[in-house]
Length: 532
Image 1 (cartoon, rainbow, N blue to C red):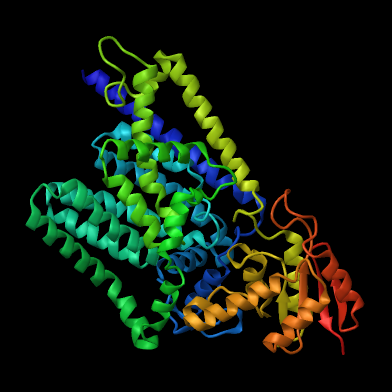
Image 2 (image 1 turned 60 degrees about the vertical axis):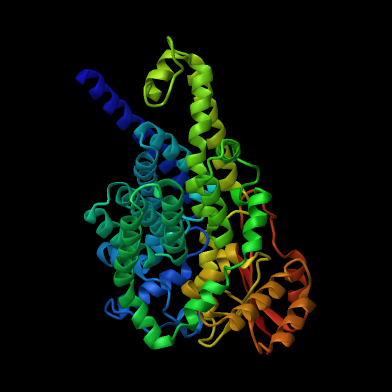
């Protein structure tokens, strides 16, 4: 008996190690696409530099893109970036290339701990963790540079959920305190992660634990909230005293649209992949099975996560979605791996034993893993996705801008890309020290109206990418930009499937317009200065 237990423990540890290694490979391999952080993160890199220059005390403003943006973002991820770069003697931009992927990989372990506790089975928790590791949305927006806050927030939220489950089940003061502390740290990392955590704890209590001791559970949830508030309140007090509540309300208001979340759910667009991946499909099937069995908790959990936050909700929705994969895998095992007198189950027949004993199960598991990895590789090359970053040629062009353009020079950076994945426009101010006139990042903290204006400004500028110089002139007149440089990148900006040139007609007509002079024409970009 003891020998079987030891073998089972070894099998579990080995299987969990495989899940983490596969998840780590999926998360770290896309980083090879660029020698810099993927996609976004320039705002956080600049904020981390501001923080270090201020002696690690919170400054009132960040000077990103030559503006005075309230330093109101939850600071834990920014502190982690600044401290890590200081300890390693490198730049925050370099840290943001790999640290988000590390945190995202650690989230696989946190998912295992939470799922094993919720499902009362370590092997079922392993299946949920493996599913979580493979769902593209669980990592795509977390391993990019700006994922430093998202990945940290999700990691802490999962750790807090595990402690919250223990709290609601065992009613121990230790779990109350730990849940509250982790909840406060979650709020200091990412605002949507804190929303997800609070909503998840309420759903778990309402559907899973409410039949227990009602009053103690309510008091514990309240105590947890108060502890979390105490942890996060020093930062909140500093921000509100300096700026009032308007930056926080403004940034939060840019993500609120419940109808968008419902549309994502009904259209299965929350998967955010070129094709619906296998693991997400199994999760959706698991939701349908649970609804048919009148098991409401996880379907409601998924629904509310998407409705309350359609912008970041699809990332956090991977948690209930991964849990929904477990009954489908269990059903497959029961049908494919019959045992003497009883069907195979995840608890009585651990996965390694079933793979050795039943070749059909091994073939199906290997096929599922292959399809999931194939989907991950396609996602990394997807030109619409976020897993793209600066090339060395782009940085060389930006170095020229830094060294050769005037101190007050303003630039229109044109890529034809939506602002969420326009990494060139976001990183341009950090790497050049110049102003990018239409960069959206950071404006959400200055008020709803300035954010909407900047968003319109950027959309109109990027619409000029396939057009001619007249479009840029009209845009400049409409927004009153005055004299400005134009930065047009070269090459396949978003992977091998993206166009070879974002703006061929615009490049040619700017050179022939007489209003601009070509001052730099390298492999990474063409740069036009206003004619004198």
